[in-house]
Length: 165
Image: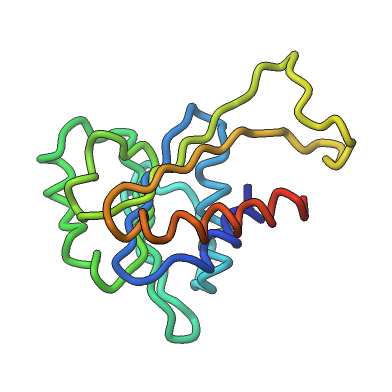
């Protein structure tokens, strides 16, 4: 998930909104850690569950990363209270558990859904995974004009990542 996040970060630019969905333990925060590494932001990227949102400044002039955990939010009104739109244009904003709450913040966003596969499914027939690696299924859906245009780049970049892994 971390390597995937680093690859995805290469496609992200200021104003991008990424909405992460998936069950507890699916790897959402690990994916954000990879995005943070790819954006070269300061500080450790950890789950902001109790503080709701953290801003990680870039080290070398890139966009800051706004990392939000919406798990404890129950309505778009609570999202409004965070003033995420104040930083949206200049930052890359990634929201865990944001489905149904944050999409109206931007005209385009990338939905990322992480699924834990059926334990009986064979997802590593060639033996490419290292011991301890847990396979995940990641589904990407671009919403709006920005991500409709970038969809081909996302597919190519992530396909290359999957082959490299």
